[in-house]
Image 1 (cartoon, rainbow, N blue to C red):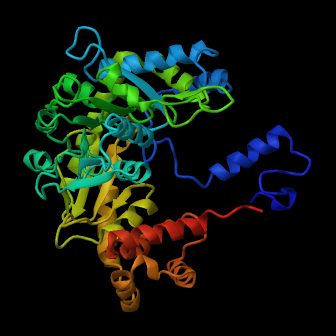
Image 2 (cartoon, rainbow, N blue to C red):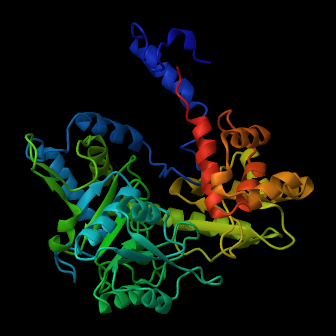
Image 3 (cartoon, rainbow, N blue to C red):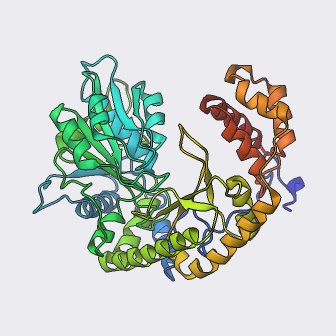
Length: 492
């Protein structure tokens, strides 16, 4: 453990420490994290397993870490690299010279959430005459749309997805458009299940109503075009589709650049204009920002630029092929185990599965997989959809696929032997009857203690996930806010 007696005021030591000591402390803390390389973590990080790529990105980041994106006239290197990234993303997503969308423009953001917030902002601010703007999204749309609606005071109209296809009905999406609607959104693919929404039909309905249509391709925008080139039946989803007015793609996902770099694209500059924030009514410099942040480190942009330049189009095509084969192998492993079924046939880089009626407790299964070194992402039940397990598959997984099948079968056997989580009746009653406002600090502390929270990351989370799954969405949100709050305390 780190000697906290040498630290006054958390990270602020009284006299400073040697550089090697500070770095050793960081490495010691990192030892408790999930492994970001090795192909056993199916969420949060994206690893291509390309030798030397981390060193290249780190070196490029270091070159531009102190460059400030606030003023592109002062640091033209950053402007040039940002324009190059936008051009690359636009080209991959069906825009640029020689296409039906030759005037695509864009901005580099810190991540998919910021890209989606800005897409909503641009749509909202394009219609100042609408006092109560609204956006239409499928229930499978990323939660960042809800965050954008909350931050920007825009109403969120949610259209359910089919229990069978996991996609929204285009007619239902069209019917949800109102005079106050400023944006219609769809996913390519949805994060939870990895299926591509009917973009052409939804974009067509939006265009007919005179409303912008945003395609959230944060997750799949850098892989679907390459999978199509490899012969996969990828449906139309990009700027080649009439009616698509903006798109987002996260480079820190399948472009394999360090976090956080995303690109928000608009079909033309007029559509992008309301995205900007400008302010001159004060005695300082006139503020003009294309994104939410003002000061931005050039490090992530430089690291992204170097990564794209190094891997190139051929490199990404190869990585997409490796990932496609890994997805197929993992899906076969799921099909081979009694008690499990795929939520959908894989269409991108997601394998999502659930339990059959006579299958194991999924949350116990997740714990058993963790015990075997596989770190997966449990997803709660929702509106008739069962709880599921999400696997984000990257190129680094390919060498591990043969190991996953036997471990999955063994984990299912162990989960069956353990049996489902049995919450105490009083705890389940609380989860299903409490309102968020009824949660007192004492009650939260008692629940957390009973579930073993407040002590850092846990490898056995089945009881916690079962409680959260039993709770209605609003109560689940409040519980998670309180539980995470217990973990995020100052180190004095």
